[in-house]
Amino acid sequence: MQDSHDENDQNNDKDNSSTFYDLWEDIKKDSSSDINQELLEEIPEEDFFKDDQSRDYNIKIILAGDGAVGKTSLRQRYLGKNFSGNYQQTIGSDFAVYEETVGSNKVKFIIWDLAGQPRFNEVRKVFYQGCQGALILFDITNYSSFKNLEHWINELWLNSTKGPLPFIIVANKTDLQELGIPSVSKRIIQDYVHKIGQETLKRYHFRVRSIFTSAKTGENVETAFKRLAIQIIAHTRYLEKIRER
Ligand code: G3D
Ligand code: MG
Image (cartoon, rainbow, N blue to C red; front, side):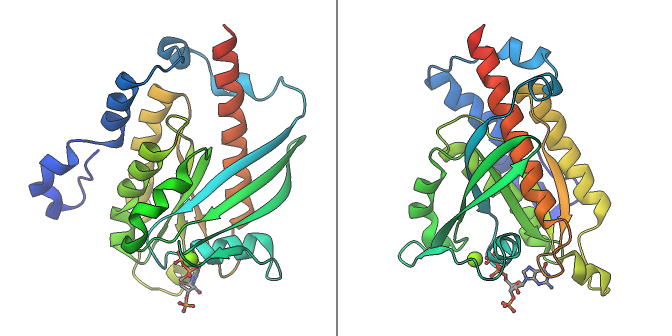
């Protein structure tokens, strides 16, 4: 999944040749997945959301992305200023629990806010285990944080114990763009996400989407979390149905 917009990457074909899709295919060969891939591809996502009754869900999600893209700010904005996470200094990460209503479902979010710094690379992997989805953030005014999305997607999928997980790409700091600060263009972002979305829909039955947020003004912050919850619930129900067959 090479980004044709960046000429600097032309020399990195070798590194980029192994995308997260390939990596996941390799992992699947080694593990005894009970998901029937053909069935996965033939049933529309909506069928697994609308007809089920309400339920309670505990959903563990991860906030991922480079340092300073706004992960902690997004979480704080979502939970309210007075809500304090449980900060774990040694791992540079924290978590918070928050209850939300999504459609007719009660969702208890367990939100892990992971430290993006490379020095936490090893310890961070543990926190992907058992997680069901992620908001993967970048800062629209920082091109390298956009280029690094693929690294974070890889890390999520490689370290999760539940297969290819739904995630939403969060383009944060839209307020800065509105101030005229140079930003990654909307078209480049949408092209990139569209490409990933087509692939994940085809292969894993969920479409990755993007959302533009500002943790500063609060624009779309709640929607980002709610959309992720919807994707996770739909995906969970879908996998249940597949396994019932
Ligand atoms: P991180 O948790 O991903 O490392 P933080 O990122 O939430 O700590 O945010 C890093 C810096 O970006 C902070 O600035 C924060 O205020 C700022 N920031 C986060 N989200 C937004 C946003 O949507 N708009 C703007 N304008 N700034 C944002 P400081 O100066 O405190 O380091
Ligand atoms: Mg942080």
